Amino acid sequence: MTVASEFLAFSADKLAQLLGRIEICAGELTPEQVWARGSESENAVGNLLIHLNGNLRQWMLHGVGGYPDQRDRDSEFAARDETIDGAAAAELLDRLRATVEEVAGLIRSLPAARLLERRAIQGYEVTVLSAIYHVVEHFSGHAFQIFLLTKQFTGQDLGFYAHLSSKTARLSPQP
Image 1: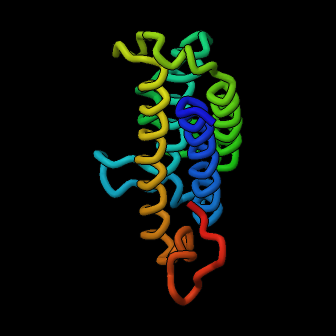
Image 2: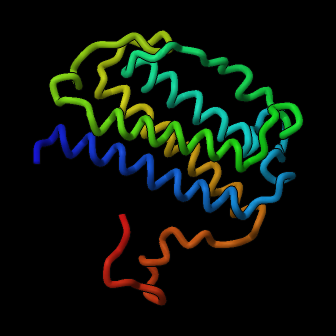
């Protein structure tokens, strides 16, 4: 295994892992909780699902994969509930899942030589490697916002790190 192949595999796997955890969270929330905001300066889980999809599509599918850029970033944050956006949490998750699968496939298929190619994405001059790093970091940051909001709404421990507890330690911990 090379450093490049490890980076590509880990990046694709991390997006899939985080998506799985987001899906668990969304399954715990009511439709009202998916669209709840503490204030106008905060985003609802629904907005974050739309935003993550838009970011992945723009940075990876457009910026690296060459697809047309059809992102309307402002609308990702303007949606207020499923009647405005036309999508319930399940539909938003279906869209995000399809995008993550497509992006993970693209990442896994990239030859190492492409990692240092330069791209102009969202007004930034970046390498393909830094674009991948950006989307994983960005996805992770918003995923953890969704985890926190879910904990606040439900009062539950999500159990993602239960294997680290001495009370529930497993033989094969999950990274």
